[in-house]
Length: 92
Image (tube, rainbow, N blue to C red; front, side):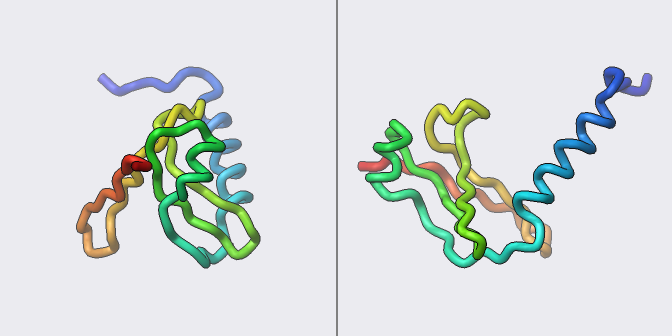
């Protein structure tokens, strides 16, 4: 049996894809690092995650959930198919 999407799901996904493209597409990553201790304190986090800084000044970082409750891991797949994880780390 095929999985059915709720009504409006395709339109919702299209709007989400448009929003992410507007924020990220076409910009170049100029810095990749972990958030420092001061940044984690401002976020009230006990762990740190990877932050990507774009050439337009935008910073993007992984969080545990959509509410921003602590750091999260960044998972990826290289062009070769190799999977990798950039884990969240203790601020320590």
